[in-house]
Length: 98
Image (cartoon, rainbow, N blue to C red; front, side, top):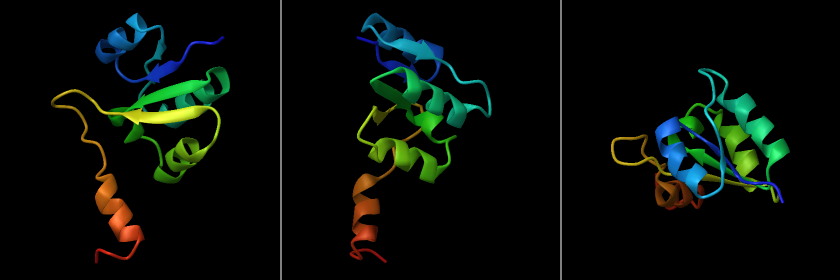
């Protein structure tokens, strides 16, 4: 069984490495390509919020919506990139917010 891949910075990646994940730190401007490569190599891809912010929204949404491999955006620790407000986005999609 292949190990999951974490796409993010090295310090947070250390914790994921201890849990058995392979850690990839995308080069500047190469986050989308790193996501594509990780999805070809692992059954689970964890993407830091900071890396997710560098990936075009449609491309990231397609990866997260795909059945396999499972792709998740994980929050950065304090001081990192904030997670998107999912509740606000869903209310907007449902027409409940202007």
